[in-house]
Image 1 (tube, rainbow, N blue to C red):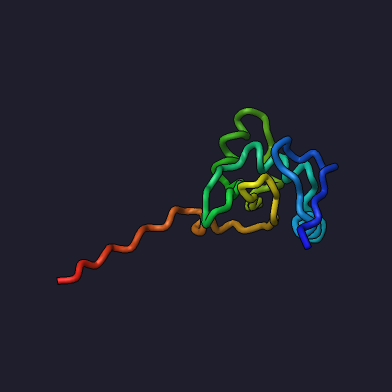
Image 2: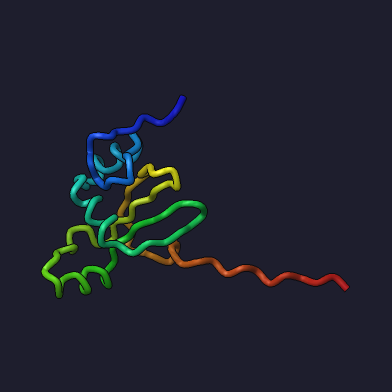
Length: 110
């Protein structure tokens, strides 16, 4: 059974919203407009096969100069699949998980 997809949200022309993401948005008080702002103005990280859009204090400060208020979505992260599906949405002000992981040193056998 495939994931139920909501096409009528018009969050971003390239993304559909899964039922799981819709439930998370509703439960966490995040509107489609909030998710749209995160996708349009947030930083992008590629982590474990997913694309994550996130708005932190740097983005809030940067866009504040242009008259765009992102303070309401600070800490929001939107996880998208490569197939164009918003999989989940959550608040997390800790962005350490968005950093690229270092590759472990390869051990050479003697």
